[in-house]
Amino acid sequence: LLSNNIYQTLFYFTHIFMMVCSTVVNLLFMKEEEDKIIKKMANTDSLTNIPNRNGFSLKGISLLDECREKNLPVALLFLDIDNFKNINDHYGHLFGDEVLISFAHLLKENTAQSDLLCRYGGEEFIMVLYNKGQQEAMEVALKIMKDISEEKFPKKPDFYFTFSIGLVTTIHKAKITLNELIYKGDIAMY
Image (cartoon, rainbow, N blue to C red; front, side, top):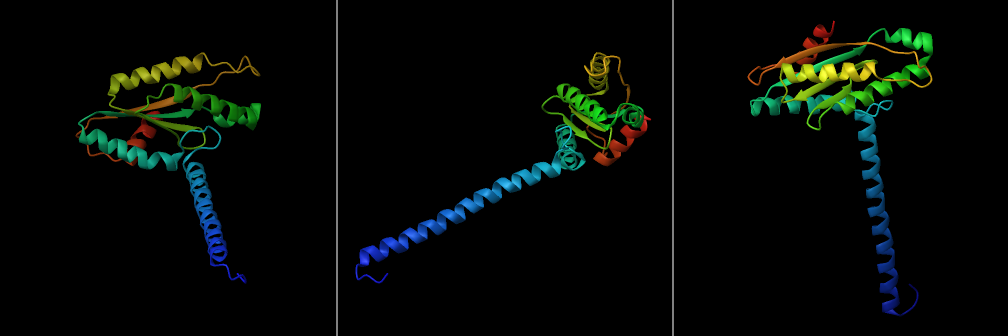
């Protein structure tokens, strides 16, 4: 700056300006990545790596609206692992986590790309089946039951568990909300 060379001074200011701009751009990219991570954490169950209740709600409402607009049926499966507290008490919480992970993985394998799956609560899961009526939803439920009956846990080869399913279907003309559908699925499960 003290030199009388205008080109050197211009180069110096340009260099500083570029450093400041690149730092700002870098910080913005870092913030964008952090925002993605935070959003994923807010909408994904950390244990099972499937959507949690929060991540499911908006997509579920949207899916239900789409089915209504396109005159398509929709089905909901409310799944609850039976006596899960006894699994934790008898085998330990780490093994209980293995059961939840295995169950979620199996549900994910039985979920079409257009369907929604979430861990709704502790041992409760919900599947919303896009464009599936009662018969198709029953087939999905039976496939899940078959797959669970064949599930093996290497550390506990004699272990098995059961679960309950509530199945609810609605036709496109029904003005049912997602919460009402979940409530009916919960009642059907009991």
